[in-house]
Structures are given as structure tokens and as C-alpha cells.
Amino acid sequence: MKVHVADILKGLNHIAPFELAESWDNVGLLIGDPGREVGSLLFGLDPSLSLLDEAIRRDIDTIITHHPCIFHPFPSVNIATPDGAFLERALVHKVNVIACHTNFDSAEDGVSDALARLLKLEDVRPLRAIAGSGNEKVGLGRIGEFASPLPFSVFMQHLFKAVACTDVQLAGPKPTEIKRIALCGGSGSDLAEEAYRKNADVYVSSEIKHSTAVWAQDAGFCLIDATHYGTEKPAMLLLAQNLEAFGQKQGWNVEICQTETEKAPFLHINNENYINNSN
Image (cartoon, rainbow, N blue to C red; front, side, top):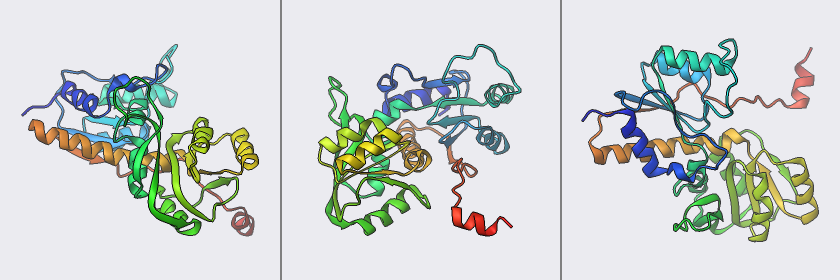
């Protein structure tokens, strides 16, 4: 069957209801035409110019990202800026751009669930449930347990594999072993105290504030900042898989692709190596 942008939006709304998005967020179709036919989808975390160029090069007509390409209102569209250039290029090449941001953060089988699965957690539930949602599986962050306690060193091996990072930041004391873990893909500093109150042995998230790290030291609670990219990137594969499953039930004939070019925006430099190699 022919598939249109409106059909893709219907599928995404089934997986991660747009009504779950925070009031300050901007999700859904941000560039494009609901009536336009769709032949292929490209999934990526960020609406970057490189991702857009990849879609154009691969002749993909629709991009689905986690972070929105239009977040704050534009007083003007200056095509000399990255944001302006993105809008112009997407419009010229008729590439539809859809965002599933905080609605996918809170959805059942959402961003933090993807990370929880990679870590093989059991009894997973929201760290901060959405009151009155009628679904106990929706909300921000997740908390769950390992089948058996893991030594801290073994846990870190699992974490590095899950987030595909070479290094992380840690605040507070390292537990000897870990049974219960709280996590939040993306920026989750504000959930740290909630993780502590729910007796997690460690809390994994990103963009941990300095003041939160100091609090963790005083509270004797372990926080791990595993980068925004690292904690969210696994979710885009999960979203693609869930949309593909939805489309198969509907009889869609759409090619679903993962980005081949996207990578973490930060380069981590080891101080000692940098000094030794600077000459």
C-alpha cells in the first residue's frame, strides 16, 4: 500500500503518543507535507546538516529524529546559520522531518527502556511516573534490577558496551556491587534525588549538573554521566524497530534505514596523551 507522511505520524503516535510531550517541547511533523508519499525513512538522534545530507545522498525522503529541528521560535530564517541552512535544504529537496522527543522519553518502550534492555534489567518501571496517565509504564527515566548483584567493575563493562562510550564521569562513592539501578536517557540531572529516594545503588544519566554532583558526594550516592549521545542513541534503533513492526501490520512498503554517518559530537581527549603528543 502507498504510505504517506500522515500514516507515519499515526504510527509514531501509536508508539510514542505526542500528547506525552512536555509543554515546552516541539514534536511531530516539523518540515514537510502530511499528504506527501513516503518511500523511505532515515532514523537519527540529531537533525544535523550531515544527517540531512546523508538522506539526500541516499535518496531518502523522510527523516525521523529524537531532537527537534525547530525547538525555539525563529525570529527570522538566516540561511547562513546551521538552523537556517537545514530548513532551506530540507525544503528545497522536499525532505520531511519528524521529531519524537519528550513524548518518546516518557512513552512505554521509550528512550530509557532501550538502555534498560541493553543492561538486561528486570522489573523495569518509570523512575517518575506520569500521574493520571492511566498507564503505569509511562513516565520519565526507569528503575530496575539485575537478576543477581554485579560487582561494580562488571557493571561498568556492561555500561560501556551499552552506551558505546570510551569514558564517563562519576560523582559520589563507587558501590562495591550493584543490584538496583536507576537511569534516564539524555539530560536527567533533575531525577537524581528521586533515584536516591528509591534506593537505587547507582543512577546513570547525562548532563549532570555540578551542584547535583556535589550533592551526590555529600549524600554518598553514585552518579554516572554517560553522555547525552551515549544514553539516547540506542533508542533510535528501538523506535525504528517498533515503527517497522507497526508498518508490517498495516501492509506498508517503506524502507527503514539507520544513519550510517552520525556520531557523538564530542571528542574526548586524554590530558596526558595530549601533552605527550603536542610536540
